Image 1 (tube, rainbow, N blue to C red):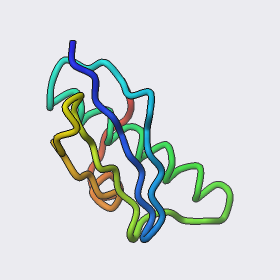
Image 2: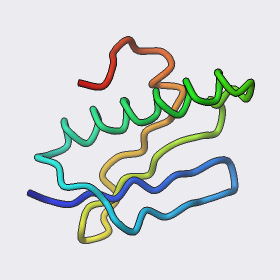
Image 3: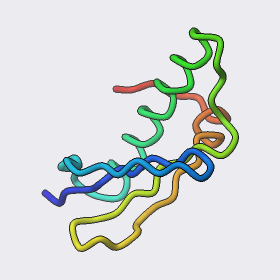
Amino acid sequence: MPRYFFHYRDGDRFKEDYEGELLSGIAAVEETAMASAKEIIAEGLLGGNPVLTGYSYEIHDEARNLVLVFPFSEAAEKPGVRP
């Protein structure tokens, strides 16, 4: 299985994912991004610090190719939970 790296962007801040995750393909990448973003949004809401605008994942494959930019606002708009 290929490894994907979920780099986190918050406006101008960028946090690189050095570990990555082994996933079966782009559908699994999008599902993982959605679930993870929902968790971060929920934690922010519970802590009184809503997280939406300007937050995203920039997801790269092992060859460092950008495969998906996933804005957290998209997670807030769609129903679904982590399987």
